[in-house]
Image (cartoon, rainbow over all chains, first blue to last red; front, side):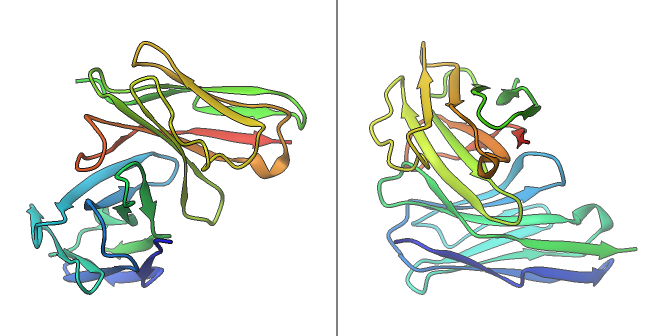
Length: 112
Length: 114
């Protein structure tokens, strides 16, 4: 059974700092991996999608990497801002490609 | 363009009542998914539709839960005889197809069972 783990559970940093969020998964048979952002009381916003054949994706200050063989992904946020404060969720597709399996998230707080 | 929409945004119901939650996916998306997020827990997959068909209902928590989709569009998640443990945010997502495609999520319905 696929399990997704995110470390750390919470992170507080001062504005301007670069940071890395970690995600690991137990079964390497995935279609893709998605990173999401969730703001309190709101739905999920997709940040980056990495296909299983890809190694990384970039969008603005965000860079996500995928090492499928070791079951790991990282989300790198450059020059963090208070507006980046949110919960970041990592999710992988199941083997059948019919569902996302989510980690419990990392709650990020960026102070000004 | 319009994203995934869900209604109602909030629902408070008494234990034992039935509730219906609605999801309008992005137009043209053939795949639709329901997830649940209970307080302090991760998102939990419930069911998916390919077109109007839901081949695998094993993710539904109990037989009190059912879902349908019509016209390859709107989907309804019904919970009968609600229990307090059903309290959660119910999220709907849609995608162009299964497998490789990005899932887009709606804002969710917060269900509180008193």
